Length: 442
Image (cartoon, rainbow, N blue to C red; front, top):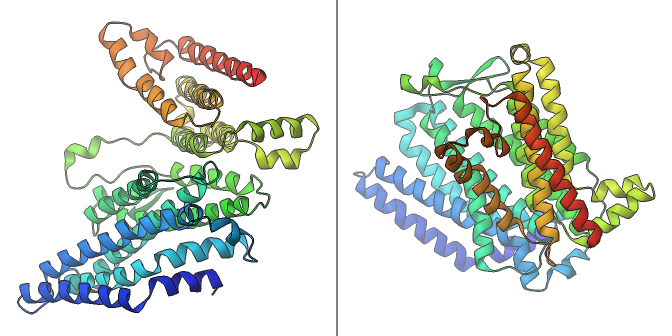
């Protein structure tokens, strides 16, 4: 154990805190025991679920999101960065130490939850649900920790509203998969299974595996960001590996489980090229919003490229541009591999090209807007403008009879192929020209 982990554990596991947690848990489950006629039943299970949610999802995600931000606000982070701890040692110590106390209480809640449902569900279903709770809680906390590390690359002042927004994003990443997995836990019919690369898997098992795998990737990302925070060079290889893995992972999905309602059986999954490109573009947009866009960093990148310092340039190169290139190449490879999709040419290729061109336009717009401000922060305004351009404005054009112009905002299946590509090409070229012009002026 590292000194930082021991320090955080010593701060959290003080006698008065342990006594308060013990009294709260004993009182809560004592009431549940009496309400269930001196047994463990539905009331105990309800209290256990509420307690786990409060401890792991609400308190734990908060602790994970602000464990480094608190150090920055207290002006102690610079001194900690000078310690002998490695990037990985600092990353896991901060994450594990900040959330250990919430997991101690969460483990007790899960034990009572399992005891209350064991007789009804049996060992397999009970264990499956417990794993769902554990993995989703860990995933939500890991996402909050990663977001907290990513935002300190761009700013050094944080308030409660900012931390709450980071916590909300972690909950948004973890709770929907948990709810979906619990709603279909135990489903063994064909409508409750997911097909992944030709294999039938229950949706609960797939959800557990997905959150577990991407939790590990989240910790790898936290390690890379901690290296950057400790002034160690971080190349693009981890980012490239994650982007390729995510595209390949989700491209294998062939169906969604729809449950017992046959009316939902009409849900269709996009083909492999569309899934590959969609996942890659989602990663590119995420990077475009969170990566630093300060002028000094981009000026140094320009100098490195001009003098052929490729290794130094790779450290500074925008990760959104890397993900955009990988998404396009991945879609081309998937188009060649997927025989069913290749039979939809040239219409499918036209739609994929339009999606990629719109992404170029939008990411260039985000950079153009951010570089127009001294602090380099314009992501919120960019998100609002893009949201209007993708939802209300196309709907308005469709209502007033300007349907062909929809191809200027999103890929339209019914539009002529030349128009589907020509308009995004013009928009992307114009946005890149405006971005280059603003950069030259700066």
